[in-house]
Length: 209
Image (cartoon, rainbow, N blue to C red; front, side):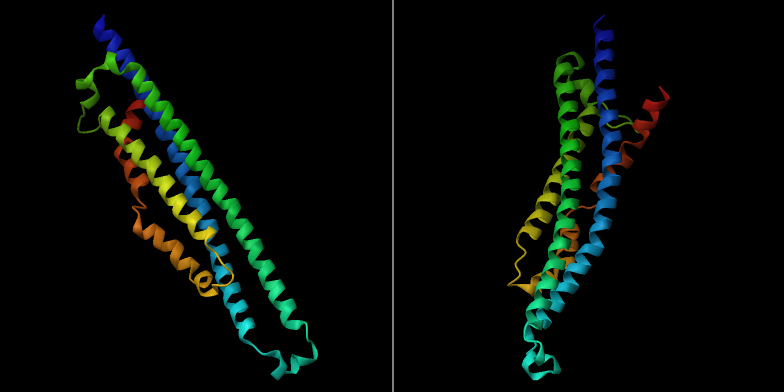
């Protein structure tokens, strides 16, 4: 009777883990595609900052455009407005990344709640048990926490980068694509994909059962 209860409890936790990793797989695709969509926006923002800096340096009084005294102001306004549009679009992309974080956190939390509900019935030995194909429950719960932390840390770093944009520091905006990519380099960008590979056999065995 006790063994049957343990198997049922373990099955419930495995089902919760399976669902969570399925969600993460979909969210990772959304995360990646959203980051790809950010690239041209960052490049455009960088180019506009370069143009605005050049406009600031030009003295139109010494050019044929001196007959248009408000030209410089109009150009700067147009460039600034274009930059604002790009920043607004980047803000929309940040909202998508935030939803990825929130969705992942919610499912990870649900998974841990399911485990805590059945922890006593399952027992420590079963939680730590792993095979050559399947990770242990403890492994997978730890990986879920790593993934949740990964999304939060990368999103926060990107948000801080965008929040620090200042039109008085145009060289920083010009370097935005490089700064953005540096975040990826400084963090383990393959963590989610690597984790999904680690649970691939587990997921296949679950689908076959």
